[in-house]
Length: 162
Image 1 (cartoon, rainbow, N blue to C red):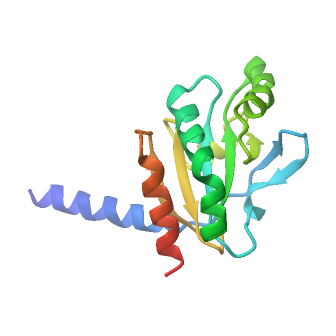
Image 2: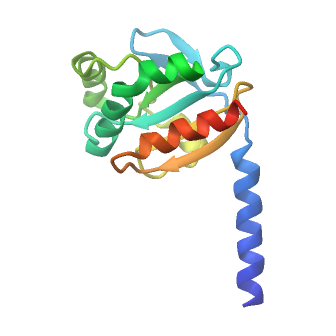
């Protein structure tokens, strides 16, 4: 039992440490081909969300669709910005822009075809969502998507404004 409690304490400390981590420096491209360094992602001092997805991932698409329906309201209320990071590789990378256009996602879309950013965060499964405060500190992480989970995201963003 003692070993379990020690392991639990170490795991919790590790989570708290990583939850306040700065963004790693990884070079990606946006869907127009412009180079973007991830350590410079920001939203003018306001919180932002980084959402990892893939064109073939149904829960990812459902999550980004659900956020799309409320994104304008979120922006008006909190100023939050979303960076959607595609982990599509190879031939699928060419499917990202058509999917984004078809879905009408008004997010800043970045391409991570070699999974460099995904690996830097230790992400195993998608969808995976991070919330960063206005200084670029990662303050919240969430894995997976269930209907309505976007409500938890905006609540976390609202907490940053308090």
